[in-house]
Every structure is written in C-alpha cells, then in structure tokens.
Length: 624
Ligand code: COA
Ligand code: AMP
Image 1 (tube, protein in one colour):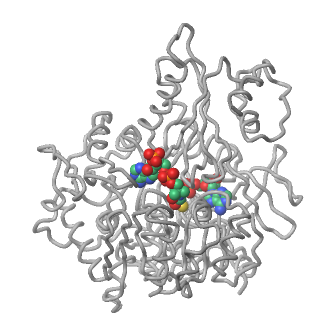
Image 2: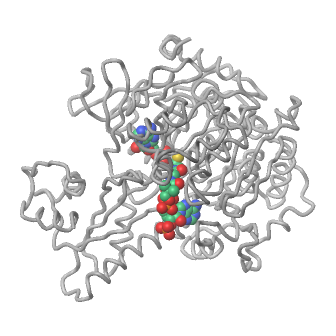
Image 3: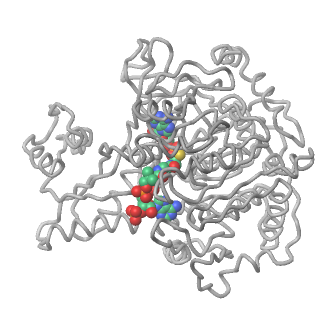
C-alpha cells in the first residue's frame, strides 16, 4: 500500500478509516461512533469510547507478557548516569506516583502542572496523571518564572510537581527558586508542590506548601487506571501564539492514542520491542507525543535524554546512544544536526559507531534546509525524513510515511499530506490551484483524531485563533506551496510566531518583556536568519523622550529582561535602540521589511510606509 493509496482509502471513508485505526489501542468500551460532528467548537472523535492512556502506554504491555522488556531508558549526559526501566518497573513507579497524587486529593479532571527537568520522575508523573484521568500540563524548563506563572494561572492546578534543579552545560538551573517566584506572581494557589531533590542542589522546602518527593511517595498505595471518556482531556500544553498570552492546547485521550498508534506504525515504521528516540524535551509536543505516549503505546523502548547534541561531551553523543541502545528511528530538530555538522563536519564521530540498527532519521520542529538533510543522509546512509506538524495537531500533518513505503525524498519538502489531513494553499483570493504558488497553508475541518478540539477554557479563543479567518478551515500559521507532484513545501510562519532552534516563541511575548522596561516607548522583535538556530530574535526599541541613560547599558537591560521574563531559551542576544520604527501610515510595524533588511534579502519599500527614511537607520542598526 503506498501513501497515496492509503490516502485515497481514508478519503473514501474517513470515519470507517479511523474506527478501523482505533482497533490498535485498548478500549474499556470500544467506540461505535467515529466522530461527533455536532460538537462545539470542533468535532470530537470516538465520543462513546472509554479508555485510559496510561493503560495503553504501560499496563497492557505488562498484561501481554512484555513486563521484562525495556520501556524507558534515561540517559543523562549531565550527570553521567544511565538507567533502564522495564515495562513492569515503569508500571510500578507510575502506579505509586498515581497513588501518591490521589492521596493529595488529585482526581480525574484535576490539573497537575509538571515543571521538571528530563528525569524519569517527570515521565512517571505524566503517566500517573493519565492513570488517574488528571490533566497534566508540562512546562518547559527553559521558561522563566513569569511564563510558569501564566500557565499556573490558566491551568489552575491542584498540585505542582517540580524538582530542585535542572542541569544545563556549565550551570545548575534553580527550579525551586523559579517556582517560588512564579507562585509569587501567580494568583492561583496550588494546594501542594512536590519537589524532587536532586543531588546537585538541595531546595529549601517551604513549610505547608512543599512536600519532598520521597515523602510524597512514602507508603503510597498503587493506583489503578481510571476509565476515562475518549473525549476527556489528557493534557494541556501551552504554546506560543501571535499574542503575548500562550495558548493552552487541549489534547483529548482516545483520539490522541489512535493517532499516535497510527503514526508509530505508518509514519515512523517502528515495531514493538524496537527503540525509538525522540531527542527533544518533554516540555514540547515532540516530547509528549514521541518520547512518552507514542513509543510506549507502540510497545517500544523510548529514550529520555538529558543533554545536548554537542558539547555534552561532544558531537558524537547521539551516535554513542544510538549504538548502545540500538535505536531504530531517531527524531530530532534540524538545529541539532546543524550543531553536530558544525562540530564534526566530516561525520567522523558517526563513523566510529555501529549504527546498523538505525533505519531512519526524522526531522521536525522547524524548516529542514536541504543542505542539512543531504549532509545527514550522505553520512548516515539512511533516509532523512523531514515532516511537518505542530503542537496543535499532536502528530505529523505532512510526512513521508515510511511504514507505507517510502516516497522519493525531495530535500526541502516534508513530502505529502498524511491520511486524515486535507491541505490547501490559500492566497487573498481563496484556494490556489496552481503548483508552486505560495500562500497560507490551511487544513480542512474536521481535523483528524488527535488534533486539538479546543483551547483550555477558551473556546472563543480557539475559534478566533484558528477558525475564523478561513471558515471551514484550520489556519496553521505557516506559509508554503505544493509542487506539481503534490509535495508540500513549508516556508515558515506567516504570523508573529518564530522558531528558534526548533523552539516555538511568540515575538509578542518577547516584545512585552522589552516594553515593560521604564525607558521603552515602543519596540518590535523580529526573527532573523541564523545559520545554527534557523532563526534568532532581534529587538528594536524606541526610547521614551528624555531618557538619558547610556544606550548600550539600556540595550543590555532589555536583553536581560527577556531572559528573566521569558527565559534563556528565547535566545535574544541583540536589541538595538532606534529613533523610530518603520510603520505604515495606519501604524502597522513593517516587520517583513525589517526581516528582509536583517537577512540581507532584496525588499521593496512598501508604498504605504509613513516615512521611507526610517529604513536607513534600521538598516544601519541591523546590519551593524
Ligand atoms: N532548562 C533551562 N534552560 C534551558 C533549557 C532547559 N530545559 N533548554 C535550554 N535552556 C537554555 C540554555 O542553557 C541556553 O542558555 P544560555 O543562553 O545561558 O546558554 C538557552 O536556553 C538557549 O538554549 P538552546 O536553544 O538550547 O541553545 P544552546 O546554544 O544552548 O544550544 C543547540 C544549541 C543547537 C545545541 C540546541 O539549540 C539544541 O539542542 N537544539 C535542538 C533543539 C530541539 O531539540 N528542539 C526540540 C524541538 S523538536
Ligand atoms: P511546535 O508547535 O512547537 O511544534 O511548532 C510548530 C511550528 O514549527 C510549525 O507551525 C512550523 O512553523 C514549524 N515546523 C515544524 N516542523 C516543521 C517542518 N518540518 N518544516 C517547516 N517548519 C516546521
């Protein structure tokens, strides 16, 4: 069966197709109805199904006799430790964390925020929530206190699970202090915070509020899997939108499990018992789908890696792990490969390893530039598969479905739409039917199982952000085109979202941080091309009249504010002070023009510009 034939099979009977696919997971009540099209604000899949995500990821494999198989391998390049948990051990850990959560009063539907580094306990925590039907919301460790506070206020968790610290090269991140500060900033008060003390830093626990992880677990009973409606939220994952406020993407339970099982088989082509490694972070959607739920639902061994592609200790880190754990499929961001290529241009560290088990390298999170795809493919000797998706979709939208028989790779294209997705390119006049013409990439509603049904507590925001601009379609926020052979090319965001080293950020959020400085009258943040990170943010600020402080000192303070309020992960290194921002006569900041100037691309001076002379100053600032 080719991808095209499978796509046609889905088109022919979408509901039958997904009911069939639903057989890949275990149900306590198998759904008879595929989709509730009347649900608002969007269709819900398998509305009459009852299941449990943790049972599918853990217990059912133990029950089927695979308890002794490796489920989770934790590799920490930061501490030099490696530990494997079998499915039976994982079940034991998860059931007890669930029991301990239940003892704290956590029940189905309650929210639990997980602000933890890449340690096994973070995975236990996610699965323990799933076991109880509680809704987890994992917050990426690279975010600062304010970002954590915003998420705590939106998700209103009963409990926060955290750790004393995270480990980054050359520094220890004091998670507990960040949590303290976040709770000072937040209005919502969780009932308890549970802190995993790591040997690298002991957190001073706050009486009444904090509970040591060891105490939390002491004598906890094992909890069983709670039957959950298929449509119950499994988790909330906040992602950057075009406004300063992150969007709480809701993932339902049954549809997500079905979509993941389908993709593990058809996109990634991995079988139970094989090792699948997504070198990402549990704070991102890739971590949710393909470190935790996807590989475990499929009965694979998954790797949780605390470290970097380079520098911990070198550009051979991925290949050493891939060899040792016989990784069949590796998934990472193009940035990681660019970093490896920079440090080991000939791929010598790859050649030193036996990578005979590695069948495929998957790339996503940002545009995979053809040079990077070719470089990795030539050196690894395996297909390098770019695939495109988003936090909102939970699994790939456009991919070369290896499990359906690989299609020829065209570097620069993630290939063709995956069954379930009808992708169209639209310009100002509606659908573009000609090949190679750029426009907005839209997906026809209803979206398939696993895609977001709404935003947490914000149906109106969901409709506004994704549905209203093009009735009947979901707006992806990306632009691109389709060639004559149906291959999709994703050229990048056409809204105010930027991708920095595969991390999704909102320029609005960064602007808020700079604008909060007392000296700033107005500011803009744009994403400019970067050979390593794909895009990096650059700030431009206009000072209030009468500000006399030294400009270089102020610029440093603006950079520091972004780091302090959004987090180091924003990677804002440069902020320029200018006398004016280029704007249209109606007051719209001309970001695209500034981006073109910064990237050294040709640009036309927009006819609507208020004052063309301002561009000279911007060019001088941006091009140094
Ligand atoms: N907790 C705390 N801080 C974090 C963090 C975390 N989980 N993750 C990143 N940071 C910090 C880093 O320490 C760094 O701080 P610094 O400015 O003080 O050095 C900053 O955020 C930027 O981090 P990063 O984007 O990782 O850049 P880097 O220069 O440290 O490393 C790469 C460069 C290429 C190695 C790195 O970007 C990388 O591994 N990219 C792959 C991205 C990826 O896997 N994305 C997931 C999507 S699939
Ligand atoms: P996130 O929600 O963090 O996964 O980020 C999703 C965004 O990352 C998408 O909207 C794209 O802008 C970008 N992206 C992800 N994968 C790809 C890809 N393969 N090619 C181009 N852009 C991608």
